[in-house]
Image (cartoon, rainbow, N blue to C red):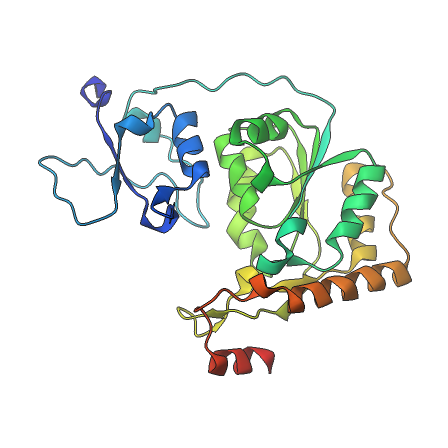
Length: 276
């Protein structure tokens, strides 16, 4: 059907969870800009509102399902075309090392060093402008991700050419991110199951540990062997003693970092259960 009448509609965006100091988080406006939506055309819902006419399209993505409905782009005329990105031979490691306190795996800094020695560039998503991030992912030949929300960047890239390896932190990683990887990458795999040491933050919805902020232990020797096999060239693994040293150091940092427990989220009683 002809939907040109919607071309100049305002976009109503529920951004309450993405507000900080009464300002929308920068990455939200970056994504809207990427989609061709000017922030001046956005009505941010931060209080109860009523509209004379409100069009609610079907959800574009569902968890554990297809990342994009084929007919979704037909609802509104496209506002902006993605720029073509030239393929390169570059390799990137998408790191969570600066977010150890909010969930990562012990020994990640050691993994970074070994990957750099093998020709990878380390990327910290939180410090990289969105368009620059998408250019790196879209043009890469090889990608390694520390499992986490940075994988959602692939949904903004469309189909990419990079062989993609994911360092698993949680047992449900394939269920959470498999559909995204299937849809956007030519080939991918994950490391073997990680062992979750635990979280120091409580999840009230599940009445248990908040696993997204947990610290995990990965068999680094097995990790590098599987990564080498996947990419078809050897990536040297650190010695067992070296792995152990870095892992224990990260466990200590995780336990002593004040940011590991966000204020007001976990009660003393809940913390006692988590420590047990």
